[in-house]
Image (cartoon, rainbow, N blue to C red):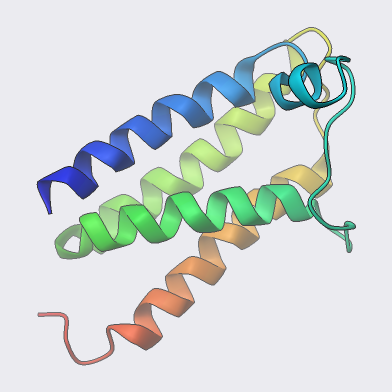
Length: 123
């Protein structure tokens, strides 16, 4: 389980780098244009990319810190809000409510999935 904890910490560092980079790192490599953000799927009311990223990070965090569910849930919600708010001051990035709600929805969906899977096994 220690390797999962390290992977969670590393994934947080990578998330912060990609989220706070002024432009799109993926766009730089895929399209040779740092202003273009690749889309995995079309958006539906919220940013699908943000839902996917925060779902994966959150599931990993919930598995690693299942003994501290409240703390990890608060941490995940806080970083989902703070990272999006940071886009107000980062050049080439923009704050969008759809992205913010995508982050938060990703955390909530992962929490629900985690609770369903681990129902009765936590204690």
